[in-house]
Image (tube, rainbow, N blue to C red; front, side, top):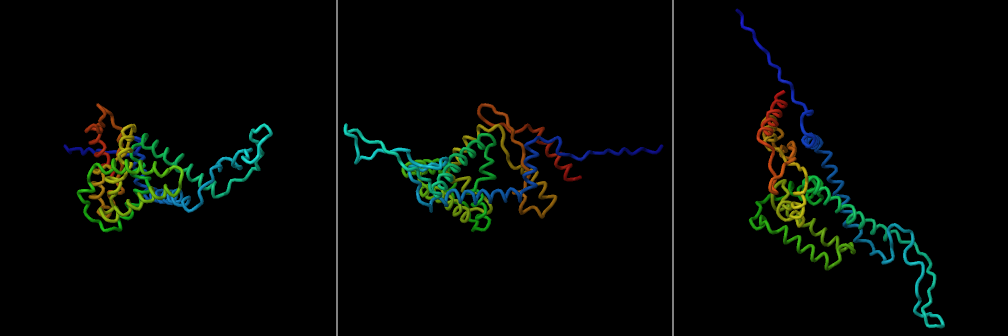
Length: 293
């Protein structure tokens, strides 16, 4: 009797069964060039907000951003007074706020009133997405690092206390020079931080964000805020290694284009627990079937 052969069809894995965050990570991997373009747009916007106001005159104390006039509608002339000796209140001619004052005030409002609240809120909601994807200093230090010396990271740079020391010094010095009010002070502190990040990227590492990992003044604060995030992203290195084996041409950029894994972790005692091993194995098997198909 002739033996029958059974054909077993394995359906190709689709993204329909993957979590939403995992699909978002895959989308980010496929649109890497678009994300790089967004990074450079943010870099240009950051440079304009930090550098341009420093080369304009300081706004007058009476200048207002959301008003066409500045100053009070009346004033007291110390040289004139009534017969009773009381000061005389006189009308004041309205004066338009100069355009450069409005430009400086707009930059200050955009940076301190919109930029930083957005960064803090995004860190509390999505973890270190800002640091890993959108931060202008991170993008610049990584770009310089690709074309830099690529030296070995010194042991003193790896000291875990640098973020705390840098944050304390930056905060104290910023309060002493009124960084929130004077554009030149902003350029001195933030511009100096950006230059230091680029120097660190040029000297140490190759295509790495040495500044972000070891020296950034706000990395410690963002790490604490990220603990509040309900989910975060990380690079699935197992999937990246499989992709590199299947396509050697991607070995040079495999780490940058690696699929992102969903990290919607549970919490126990303040610690994040990774996804269970069975789910991780199923995800790896699905990726293998997808690449084999």
